[in-house]
Every structure is written in structure tokens, then in C-alpha cells.
Image (cartoon, rainbow, N blue to C red; front, top):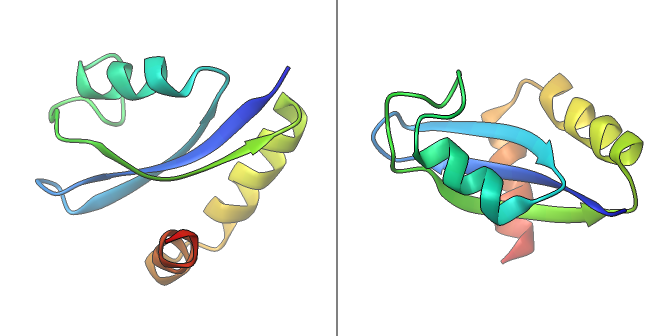
Length: 83
């Protein structure tokens, strides 16, 4: 079953969050309704980028790859290249 790797952004916190899920809409709802430890405390998360992959292992690999860069510039590059 397909999965998604996604990047969301909070203008209030001026932060990005990278994650993976099988149900993108539901996960975004969870982030905006304090159902996620890291994103709890603000409800202005916006989906900025997503990529569908074939399975969870591929999603975890891509999520790890993005996070390993530890770079806001890389995240913004991904977002801009999708536009």
C-alpha cells in the first residue's frame, strides 16, 4: 500500500516538520489538532510538500534522507522544486 512523505510548515513557529504516513489528510488533521507530540501547541500547520512512495520502507528511507540533511535550505529547495 502506498505511503506519503510530507513536509508541513507552521508560520507561528517558523518551523518545518518532516514525516511519513499512509493517510495524508488524516495526519495533517492530527497535527493541527494537538494529536502529535512535536507539533502540539499550534494549529497552523500547512502542507508544503508531499511525495507518494510505494511502501512504508521507502517512506522511512526518504524521510530519513531528508532529515539527515539537517538543512532548512534543503527542505525549502524541495518545496520550491515542486512548485
